[in-house]
Length: 316
Image (cartoon, rainbow, N blue to C red; front, side, top):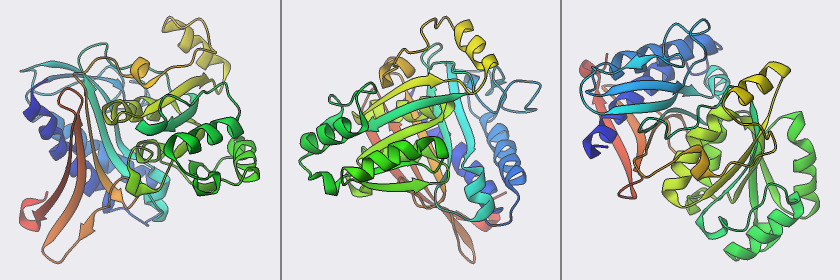
């Protein structure tokens, strides 16, 4: 992948994030998401590449734009698969809560798992403990192993998970051994990646969440040297058939980050909409808009933090 192309995607996520940020706190999650989708779709078509959305807004009959299978880009340049979320955390934006991103993960054809939209059980951590986590192990044992690997007392370990009833048994066990739990209403892409950023204070991601988010996060964790283990947890019978149609017969299979995102021609790009554990959100000033983004490239192992000042007469 051309290194400049990864940076082109920053303009795409910036535009989507700005569009969504105008809807923060207005109680209109669908309008916020629609604004981000419209802007991301428009900006993609200014980029010289042949893109195929492999994880997007849904099936073609559910999503008019950025649906799974849609072709984007000018049609010139490299062929690439895309996993995208124009607005991760629509509820957070609608209600003005913590944590929201515009996200693009990209790689060559067949490098990203074409995961159906269902749940996955997840366990993610940073480089120091990447080799000691085990999705089949107990919550207690995983916490103890991670604490030992990173040189922390268990009471210093902070676990982030989605605030869902299905995750409460994990939360209760983590608290019973003395670990700290931070609950988030949505947005486990940023939470998973934050385990690789020491300054975030997050040591583990636990619990179940969306499969789309697993693939997006896996790209970043692989680049950063962390690990994410995921296993399908179908929401309904129809999901099982979709998973089997992918050629996955064993529903208990545990996917590593390298299973979800293959090879080293991968990039991850995100722009913050609202402050979260990974990025600061959009800042509106009198005559400019300030965005905060991250772009990672697997081949070179580069991680760039980009702060951009958009003068209002240039923001559309």
